Length: 238
Image (cartoon, rainbow, N blue to C red):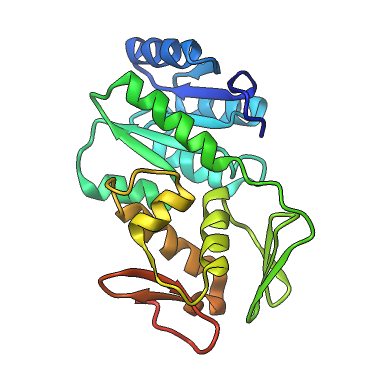
């Protein structure tokens, strides 16, 4: 993914024309190429056709809900790495947690500041750009990470990870044996201010452990502090 904003495509999905126009205007003014969709099916079609870098996705959509769109995006190999920022009028924590569990990268509740959304898009794009690393392999027990190919394998079998899950795993393995607090992980993996929702880390750790299977125990919960990747013996998943 290039660093020039003009190379980044953002897909804005909302069935409220005023919100769609406002968001598209601010993102275009920031230099992004912007397209829009107004229904769940349109969003999925546009995601496959245009392969945007980031989708700004409203939850309440006709046809298919934002949750359903997000779930479908993460299930498809050709769209699973699209960054997703959820827009929601719902303030219930359960809805936000559900979105993070399905693989959302960030969320904003309505009403929101268009300038804040633009900054969040910028921050998400920064952390989705993986550093160019060649010829390096990390090995930790049954886990092997090929940094040059951005692949993770457990017992030789490749596991499918989103960009954020991959960066989270690499960060933990590179710092193995050292406890990483949630704010540290937010800054390192999400490029985010350490005072935002730390629950984001917990949701992604849970999904990452599930995908790692019997290697998931290597991510240890250090209660009251954060997480640590260990290889000496099975730790508690917490």
